[in-house]
Image 1 (cartoon, helix red, strand yellow):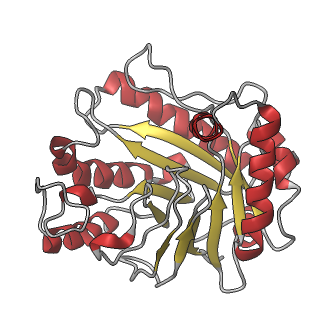
Image 2 (image 1 turned 90 degrees about the vertical axis):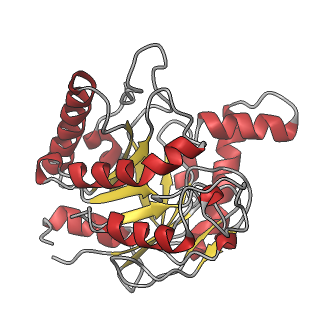
Length: 304
């Protein structure tokens, strides 16, 4: 994998001495605010959120190679990170516009890739809700949106991390029907955004299964979408769809099911610590740990 000097410098900044990215993720905003409000029993404002993110940065970054934060509440906390830790900054607004079809995201109005880089970002991260089954009228807009961001990152010579969250309209993403569709959703999304036209350097994707529907899993609900053997094969087959380095997100699922895979945690500010010692499906074996409402990502860094 060839990489430009600036992108290589950015990847090195968020990697450890082994060339592995072991990053804590604390760019949650709306979901974190709700979680803190529920826990504290009172309204949560800017000061409390920034204080929380600062504590996470102080506690976790001595053990991480980088931290992922947002420019809304994370710039102050980013200064609290350990000297060894690089910085990834989110570029998108939290959530999506529920009044229009397609779960289209938007960028932060006061920011650009250049401004995020000037604020100290070593890498740029974008979250995209993506359904391969959506009509072209929706996905063409999303493809063009990612292309524009990719061009911004190329122009500023900074790594572009794209996080993909799958869905299908009219189907509960936590249910059995979607669990059966999820492997194809993840694989098709990885294949699409591995194309060079998007300028993505690292993909962050959901695991291709729902452990709740794996036969014999400790968290199995009784309904079955795949056997344990099928689930393991889906990790391997899905990994083959990617032509770029990628990270599997655990979404807060523990290793109780006994799966061995390349997993990290991110989409769950739940306060539950989890630890994985996976055998990677398509990359080298690394350990990813997530906890204290943050998460870790482990990924071998590309070389020049």
